[in-house]
Image: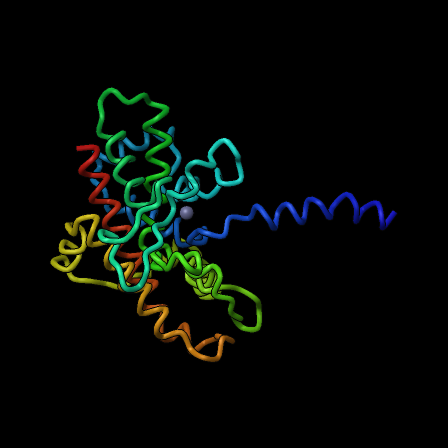
Length: 260
Ligand SMILES: [Zn+2]
């Protein structure tokens, strides 16, 4: 019986391991971005989005981009979640992925959402993706090096558990902080209105360059001892909180512009 159970479950376990998407802000990070944006958009935008998403919240749809990854039909969207850039190049000058990248993807989502001829189904699909991708773009390792697949191949230990540099920034630090997405949203850095305005009006290329600069700092400050714990969070969790804030503020401004 044990052997039978093992035979039944082993392939499932292996498949789950192989198909687990390894390129994603954790769910909590994405939900914070969606939640913050929904608190900041205008009433008019909120009304239009509620209607388009049939009442689903931005926090709910924020993880959609990763949920479809396991489905083969959506395989062509996998390169949309990142843009790998060498540390001595910029996104603008670097070699582009011919299958697309996160910057082109965000532009495509905006274009479809702004086009009055787009179908309702398309608008719904690309809005869900947009909410996800604005979050991804603010996770610096989504602008990591091509040679280590945005930090996925940089193996580490986090409080003794095996992980990698990408996952550390996607989810390990956030999850171990122990706040729900609503708690984390309520406890993001408090900035002055003028500073928030500055963040909101920065164009897409600034978001990209900021993340890429942070990725470079993350690589260069990686400790020799790859068994990371509290010290790493003390040094870097402020960056995570600031990036989540920026993503939510910018997503809200972008949605207000699209649905104006
Ligand atoms: Zn993603």
